[in-house]
Image 1: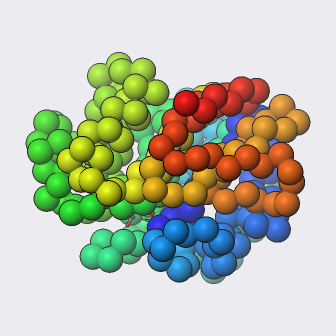
Image 2: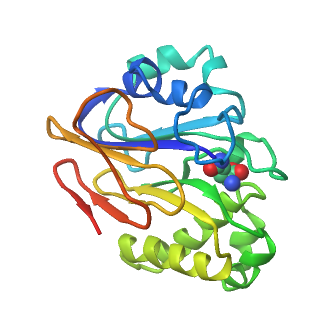
Image 3: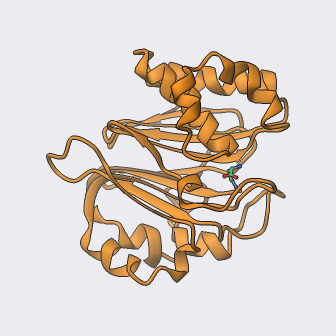
Length: 244
Ligand code: GLN
């Protein structure tokens, strides 16, 4: 399964989180510690999205290659500073394509979204839920993967004006009902608020120095990291973290 992380706080270079910290995302890609039986490494692509000051929408950089092979990334990550970002490394579920368009984050307007996990019985188990989506959404799906389909479900609710916490919580509940045993760690941000779920996978959070980091695995040995138990909904801003 994939690994993902999100940051809200004072502007910082992305490089530490993606590449430099002892257990940065690139390390979690080739030496993850807590995959819970869902694969071994995360070498099927990566992506990052961030919010440049004053920009209407986030900038996204994705690749189908392992994060550690991207020769441009160290310089991009060192010179890109942001107060909000979401990044992920991917381990493709068997049967799903390895393409740039299947790598998180998925995006729409100000939103960035990532899924760590698997929808059991996909695609048959999602057919009824997806059947309620506009046909054009289905025809323009980023990639034929469970994660891209989950994004369509969340995005449709956001576009309909549903509060993001409700949108995420209801998609997790609906998908767990339709596809029991699914692993649905979701991560969604608009650059000011971050929403995460734990359903079958690891997640930790660190609140420190006016910032919040939510990540599949702690990025360093700081005692500020707190593991998020399974079955929780996390709502964060740069200065608050609520777990319910
Ligand atoms: N099942 C999704 C995919 O194949 C998510 C991957 C993951 O968490 N490993 O893209």
